[in-house]
Image (cartoon, rainbow, N blue to C red):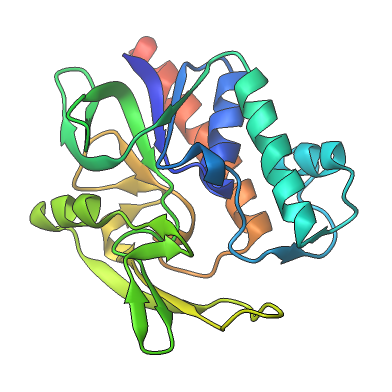
Length: 241
């Protein structure tokens, strides 16, 4: 059993997994595609990320003063390298289709049929909860271009009476490409107490899959705030008064 399972290896999920492993936790980081680890929703980022974060370390390692076009791919490679080189992180390419309470934590159900168990789990699935990419009159089941949505996971959470809000976010127009937008679901604010999901013990949500305004910098800062909460909770559990 892992100390922590993180579903989603975008910016928020990767940052949390990296920081948690460096804090001594045994972390399972699950992504639908290892080729999308650390991918950006917006392919251009001016300036830097918060100091000492995984993303800032990767940006420096990639030699990019700002992230534009091909530099985004260099950032992805640097993020993936740092994750793979960090002891305590177990990268798994799999599709999580549901979460259930376990005897000692949380059980992640996968499309492949092999369950994974962790003491606690974090959903950092960005714009992928029933994500739909809209390009003109066409619609794809995706949270980003060519990246499949978490429809089964969304349906499983919906069956557990979770409430969601619907959002739509326009992607920046790139030269030579058609403009598109992404429609997706986020947890309603009432479902959360801080980062904690009220309906599932030991499960948290982080980043764009929650309501409110989010930036690249804010989700990285939130990842470290959540880690502090997880570590404090773990210490309290291990040392009951």
